[in-house]
Image 1 (cartoon, rainbow, N blue to C red):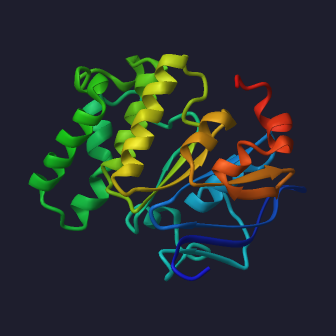
Image 2: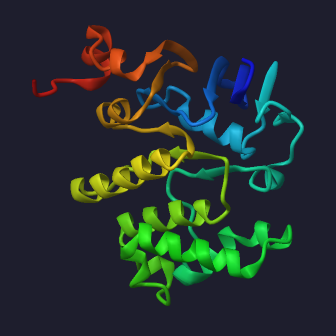
Length: 246
């Protein structure tokens, strides 16, 4: 699709003889928050890892910002080109301090010539956005709670000043209060202009946040549309949302 921030056509991902993703087609426009929902094993995380370059994949097209070919772009260059993943399981460096994790998130920018003063300004913004981790800068990241580690993973990704954020299961394993705080931040960064692709086990929350949604089943797109319409679709409610208070 013209002018799409991310355009994926015919994406396939295979593990040995098992095809986890079977010819996926979807796009994300600049400034959108788009969610991928579906049951466990639908291929959502495989899709995110493929886009981030963490899994080999095939595609007819996988373009970013209209001109960047993700099929040929090495994984380590994707962040430098503005594509950042917050992976399922957070992926923080537990033996490093919170501050060291955050500094690592800005490393590619510094190598590209960004002034340290600008990075320090962005660090202040992250600490304002995530006050819980501000209190723990000198702590080992492994000593943080699960919710604090998720905040750190998101802050580290944002320190790279990406054009698009890939969020894979940010609420997994978190207490309800922490889930609420995490998604307040997701809403905030989206309001500030960040393009977001969200994979989320809590389909109800995801559809409340998103502009559009794709529903995956067995490696394929089963439904797609405006999130506000899908959340009221009887098929989606029955299969993915369960009983929601009226």
